[in-house]
Structures are given as C-alpha cells and as structure tokens.
Length: 204
Image 1: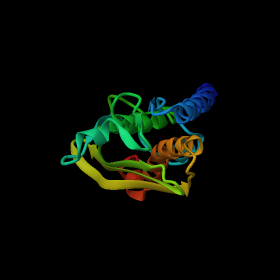
Image 2 (image 1 turned 60 degrees about the vertical axis):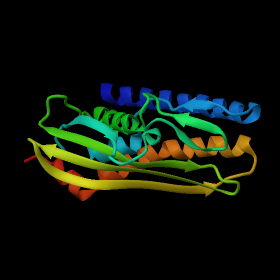
Image 3 (image 1 turned 120 degrees about the vertical axis):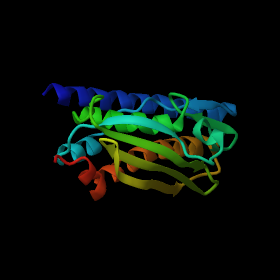
C-alpha cells in the first residue's frame, strides 16, 4: 500500500513538472532562444506494472556513459530546437537514462545496490528535430547486464518518434521537448519487454 502511494505521488509530481517544463518552453518560444533543463526522472505506471508482472530479481544500476566515438556534446546538450537547446537534469543524457531505469526499478521494488546483477549502458544516439511540418526524435543505447561478472545481456535498444509539427515555434518547441522526453520511457519500456532482458533478471 505504501509503495502504491509513493508511486502515485511520484507520478503526480512528474505531471506537474512536465507542465512547468512546457510553460518554460512556451515562454522561450515567445521570447527567443533559451536553454531548457529536463526534469528528474519519475516512474511511470505502465513500466512499473511491466516489472511487477514479471518475476524478476533485484538488480543494481551501474555506469552509464557516452559510447566511444560519439561527439561529447551528444551527452550534454540537444539542438534541433530552432536555436533553443535542451539539457539533461544531471548534466548527462546517459545519466538521464540511467536515472530513468533506476526510478522504474525502485518503484517496482527491484533496485538493490548490493545485487550481483548490474545493468550498464552506453548512449549511442540522442536527437530531436522540431521540423516545420514533421518533428522527429531518436534515442538509442547499448545496454549490458552482468550477472556475477558475466555478461548475460548485450543489446542496443532504440526508441524513435515522429509527430505533426508546426512552423510556429510556440507550438513546435513544446511538442518536440515532450516527444523527446517521452523517448526515455519508451526505450525503458522496450527494454523491460525484451525476452532476453527478462531472462537476464530471472530468478535462478
């Protein structure tokens, strides 16, 4: 019961934060270029239910970093927003994804800092384009799971989205920000749906 109340509170806080973020982006579009910071990750009901419906053992979340060979700015700032930019809550988009996974595991009671199962990741793509008619976004990461030091899961997980955009910045920018932010939950949801991920965290 306590876990349910905690998750509901987190979800309501996440909604309020998203509304404030949308207002900031709208004001930025009306007044000129601006840098907007993403809100801290919060669990989603859909992903929490996925985890609770599967008999998994707790895991810890390890290092998440930018993949080798990728430009450093990919991990710290996001263009494609008509002169405005989006930055991650903790200074790293790889870290944003890490915290997203940790938030979902925590809500499902599956995060354990002492677990011998470690989830790690490398950010391989992060982009958004608030186009004049069509917007698009992409988020990708190579996820590895190690169980007692042995790699039991190693896959790139990709989340993509396209949406109707507008030449009006006050419409296009909030939509692009929201769509990009939603990619994190989409990617994490795809990870949790993966049969190999479930096997990697299955009780033995």
